[in-house]
Length: 99
View 1 (cartoon, rainbow, N blue to C red):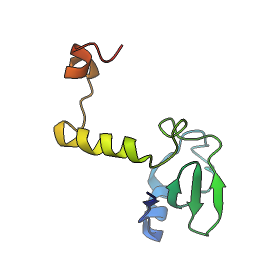
View 2: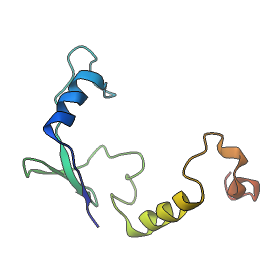
View 3: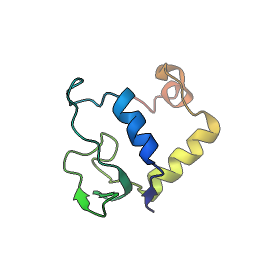
């Protein structure tokens, strides 16, 4: 499975005006390169250039992007509870599944 971006030129302009990206300067930010797809350890830019994600996202570092088993687990979870900021009060934790 491959993730497909729907980022537009307007989205990029909004990004440049309003969003600070970590690890870059707030006053002279690095350019943003739109990623249109991701699979495994590779990212594809809007230009068609393919990059190996050497730094990697926290969540993709071990299994890569769009791992089918992880995607299925996330889809199942969102039907139960999409988010809870106090994670220690959820049923898996109460059963001892989370250290």
